Each structure stands twice: as C-alpha cells, then as structure tokens.
Image 1 (cartoon, rainbow, N blue to C red):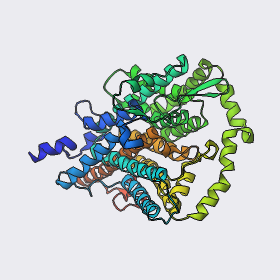
Image 2: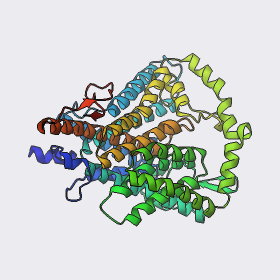
Image 3: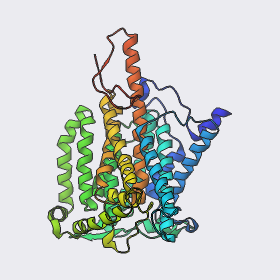
Image 4: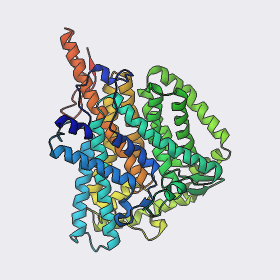
Length: 483
C-alpha cells in the first residue's frame, strides 16, 4: 500500500545503472502525467485567463504548479519522499530566491520599505506565489527525472506545448488572426485579466507572440528550448524523425517571426553553448545546415533582414534603447532609498510605460534590494552553469548532450534577462523552472555515472581514475577522470 501511494506522486526509484544513462527504447521511463500536463499547459492555457477571486495567479498553469508543490510536500510529510535526497544546485538557487523574497516581503508588510498600497500588496502576494509555484516545478522535476528516458518523456511534453505555441505564432504571422481567442472563449469560469499583446509592428513586419504574453517572451522561450528540440531530434527513438525536425524548424520560425534582438541573441548563444556537447557527426552537420537554414529563413520572410539590421544599428535613435538608459538614474535613486531589501516583491508598479525596467536584474535590485539581486542572479545563472560543468564530466553521448542542451537553455535565460524583465512574463516564469529541474536531474545522473565508472574501474583491476578538475561541491568533487 505504501509503495502504491508513492507511485501516485513519484514513480518508484529504481537503482540507476549504465543502461539508464542513455536512451534505451527497450526500457520504459515516463514521468507522471500530472508533470507532463503541467509542462504542456504552460503553453496551451492562456496566461491572461484567471479565476477572478484568485487574481493574477489564478491561471491554469500556476494552479497546476502549486498542485505539484502540494503533492511534493504531502509525500514528504507522509515519509514517501526524503527531502534531503537528490541535492543539486537548482535547489540552492530557488532556495536563495525564496529566502530573499520572504525577507523583502516581511520588510514591506512591516513598514520598513515605506508606505504600501493594496495594489503593491497584491503584487507582492503574486510574486510570492509564483516563487512557490516555480519551486514546486523544480523539486518535482528534478526528482522525477531519474533516467534519460524520464528526461525524454518530460522534454516531449514541454516541446509539445512549445510547438503548439509556435503553430499559433505561425497562424498569427501569416493570417493576422489570434487563435488564442478561441481557447479563451472555451474556458468557462475564467476572466480575461489582460496584459497580453498578440501583435506589434516593427519596421515592415508584424511581431507576434504565439500563446505567450509578448513577442520578446516568445523569442527568448523558443531560444531556450531550441537546444532541447535538437537533442530530441537526435536521440528520440519514438515517432518520425521528420516530425521532430519540423518542430525544431517551427521554433526557429517563431524566433524569426518575433523580429526580436533578444531572440537572435538567444538563438546564437544557445547554439554556441550546445554545439560543443553534441556528438561529432551532429556537430559536423550543424556547421553545414545552420547557415543554410538561416539563409532560407531570411529569404522566405521578406523584410526580415532589413528590419533586424535597422533594429541592431539604430543605436540611440531606438526608443527601446533610450527608454532603458533613461531609467538608470531613477533606478539608482530608488535603490539608494531601500538598498538591502528593496521596495518589496513585485512592488515596482510604473505608472508610465516609459518607466518599465526592461531588465530583470535591475527590476530585482529595485524590488528585492541587493539581497534579492544576488539571489536572482544565482537563480538565473547557477543552473545553466552547473549543467555545463556536469556535461563536461559525462562520457555518455546522450546524457552529455542532454546536459549541454539544458545548460544552453539556462544560459540563454540568464543572459536574455538583461534585455527584458523576464520574470514578469508568465510563460517564461514557469518554463524556466523546468530547465532548472532538468539541470538538477542531469546533475544527479552524471554523479551516478561517475560512481559507476569508478566502480567499474575498481572491479576490473585497472588503474584508479584520477581527477583532472575539481568543483566546489563536496558531492560532485571529481568532474573529469583520466587514467
């Protein structure tokens, strides 16, 4: 009975062997349906449709993420899951963000941050709940992804949602209609909370947002997931290869349809990080096909090259750039008033669109103070960097490429947070925790790989493996091994 109840929340935890560290069609490995549905729902359910009494956090994706957290807590309380097992850098990252958020939240409601209004208190509650929801996704994902087959199962669900989002973007770009309106009308009991922008004009083209809130959000999220889509195309034994690569092409098309500098930056940065971790034949093909694919894309979308070129070369004449730079003195003044814990979580509510801080790090500095700024930087940077370090340690091609793809997605998120206030956008806010959770799962798997390699070396009587590089974690001390 105990094991049956445990399976409802987390699959049974088998001992991970060598065969589990690569994609094995003969071995079943699926994460729970609830986790898969939550991953797909981030993209499918409109984030502007809320249950009115719950406010902005009353969306289907947030409620699913909170349900994951509740099940994780219940499994811990009933002894079905040990909270100290499966430690990884992602837990440290979300833990620091949670501590910083709580400290700023207490300071705000105790009056240490100045006067507050009902709107600012509601914004603080919303931020607190989003951090909890993100934590639920990270904790469950890292513990559910115990093998590469588990990772593939979850990646399929994430990409299914992303491909739906890209199809919506394609329809928006070609036909100038928004299919998300039809889904909104099919959600009884939900209210339109506003905030989404499906279409924007840039130069000669119309930017689209797919099922996200904004075209920049669509561009960055697709850039984060592109390496995972390539990994799936290389290793997924289920389904048609042409279908997998069509999904990858849709992600690239969606990035282009946003006409976003952030998307172009994320695209090239993600590939730059991921390609070295791909198997050698795939690296060779990438060098050949990537320039050709981009050339075809630019030819197929008239005006794209000119619009992007003008946006990159506009300099001080671009309003989106001057708006950012003009806000720097205001940011310095607000930080000087509350340097340690800021104004309060989510408590920066600009009355004018020109005052929006298109930089997540600056936004965190203002709202959470220096403490929250450090926590945000760790949350956005540590999972991707740790996945890259882990990828260097692996000698299993599929696992190494998975860790590289996750690292690329995390690093794209960290760098592109400099170009927009990423955690104010709901799809990014709930997609990134899946990247963090996958980074934690791959970290644990590569730890296991190192143990298995060491045991194999000892049992075979070969000379012991010697560490060639050290990492700060005491549990992941030896990164690469040579004889």
